[in-house]
Structures are given as structure tokens and as C-alpha cells.
Length: 434
Ligand code: SER
Image (cartoon, rainbow, N blue to C red; front, side):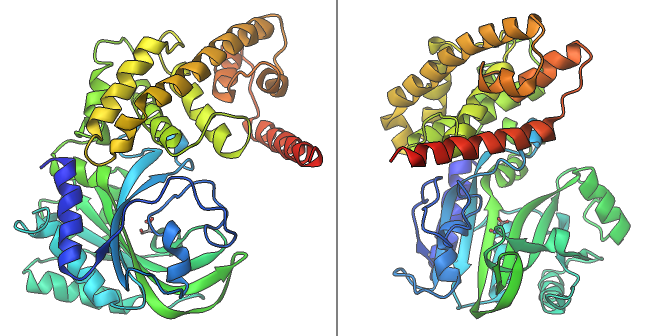
């Protein structure tokens, strides 16, 4: 099954169950305060819907579903492994004070396992986690009981429901907004357990080894947080579901990593002959895909906020190539390939691809110059990360790499703090000009 079919099956499944289908919102968050928890990008499907989860009425009703573009940079150091990406699509269905745990759990199981309407995954390879409880919210026996009923009805045996703490089974997007306990669904991708029930310890070990991977999350939104503290219950409990399209696709297509799915393989194939590590190739594929989507959504490289994230992604893609270079021709081939993969689901990439190429090429060429002068400066003995970065534009990853070769350890945390201060200063400087 192609990724496009997984996406459309999901939307049709929920449309049949009374959900209005929404187009994906931009990757760039709306700047309305309190709406987006002040993040720069949408990091989850629920983020554009925060006002509605908090009680505002949605023009399309109480049941919604979509495939939302998201960007997460918290995982940036994990990129290159089998399952993480900075950009990905999150399939989601929402109940805004309508159905709750029973239907959310039942439908997630049905969609994942139904051959006719869903993905036809082997139900015996599913394992789930629920919230074990803490001072904020009780142990989620309700979700566990619903799961027991679902497994019993499907004649699936053995222990496969695990209670975990807030670190694993509590969801919130930052310090402010709706939050609550969740129930995550894992698939035994390695078929390690042969469809049997397992102990808590066996499950934890399989999760650590990524033999089981999270493919779905049902969040039961019940509380509201303000400045990091729960200030009360939501007017109506709601449901927020998230399922990563890349991970679902990898599970369905029987490959062990997201880069071998039809969403990323065409991009990886462009580098098939390059004498480069798989991890580096994956970083290039991931970062160029993210950069393309960001540019299409209106972001341009700069030294602050969203533009800085984009700049960092482009530069990281470049320093992961074997020759630390991306010229117009190579950029063109990458963007054409990404546009082709998404020509039906996000035709705007195809429409704007020449603009995307232009932005990427200009940034890559600026970086080429900076790289050359920065490296010269470093060779002359200026090893201070802050000046190398601010005056010469060398990315911190590159500074770390160069320094390592000379036996110098870079304190990245200290650098990041100094850089943040510098960004705040340049921002207030800009404000003073008006
Ligand atoms: N908000 C939850 C997540 O991102 C479910 O959509 O995992």
C-alpha cells in the first residue's frame, strides 16, 4: 500500500464516522498568543486546533480529521536513525467535546487492523500503554478496561497493556494549553514476540531496542495548563489523535526505517552511489525535505527564529555531504524529486519549486563562502565557537567537528546560551529602529 493510500484511507475512515476533513494548516504557527503555545512551528496535529480543544466552537463541527504537516526540531540529534524526522505528516482525528475514550480507542484499533477499511495490520502484534497516574490525574483504568474489551472481542490473548508514567503517557504542547493522559499503540515491527503477550520488562526492553515502535497516540484531553501548572479541567473532555504517516508507511511497507518508504526512498536513491554514511544521507534527505516544505510555507533563511531553523537545516544538509557542497544542479534534482513525491498531496511544492530551488541555491552559495573563510580563520588559530559562528557563519556542528580533529572540546550548551543572548540583543536592536 502506498503512503498516499494510507493517508486517504485514514481520512475516508473518519469521514465515514462523521468527521469533517480539514486541509493541513501551514507549518508556520499563527502568532496569536496562547493559541500555539508560542512555538515557531506546528509540532503536532492538535496545535492549530488548540482554541477549539479549549472550548471555542469549530465551524466544521465537533468531529474533525486531517493529515497535518509538522516540524519538530527537538529530535534533530536523532535524525539519521530509523524512525525520526524533522518534518513529518501526522494523521489525526479529533473529538471536540463529543466522543471520548471508548470510540477513540475502538476506532484506532479498527483502522489499524481492518483489511477492508483500514491498514490490515496484524492485531496480535499490537501492544499498548496507558497512564499509570500521578498527582495530576488518576491511573487510567478506564482506557485499560476499554483496551481489554477490544482485545477480548478480537480474540487476542496475553498481556499487552502496560501502565507507564507521565514521561511516556501524558501529552501537552509546551507550558500552556490543553493536556491529558494518553494511550500509545506500538507495533512489534521486528516480530520479536511472535504475537504473544509479554511482561512489562520485556515490553520496555523491546521499546528501548526499537523492536516495537509507536505508531499511534490517543490523547484524552481533560485539563488546561497555564505557565506549566494545571489550572483546571477543560469545559468538555476531548480527543486528540496522532499517527505519524512515515511510521505507519514503514510498518505497512515492511521496511525497517522511514527512509525506505515511498515518501523518502526516491530522495535517498539520488545518493545511492555516493560514498557517504547512511546516517549522513538520511540527514540530507530529511533536512532538504523539511527545508522545501518550510520555504513553500513562506520561511526564508535568516539569523533569527524560523529563518534560523531553516538556515540550520540547510547548512546541516550541506555539511553532511561528502564534499560539503550543494550546487544548483544537485539542489534542482532534490527539489524536483521531493515535488514529484508530493505532487498529488501537496501540489504547491510543484508550483513553487523554482522559487524553492532559488532560495536553497542562494543560501547554499552564501554558506559556501562563509565555510571557506570560516575554516581559514579556524586554521589560523581562532577556535572560539561564538565568533566563528557569528562573524564567519560556521555552523556549530561544523565547529564541533573541526575542533574535535584538533583535540578541542566545544561546550555547545555555553555556545547556545551566548547565541540566544545575541539573538535577543539583535531583536531588541531591530525593535529600537522603529
Ligand atoms: N498530540 C499528540 C501527539 O503529537 C497526538 O496527536 O502525539
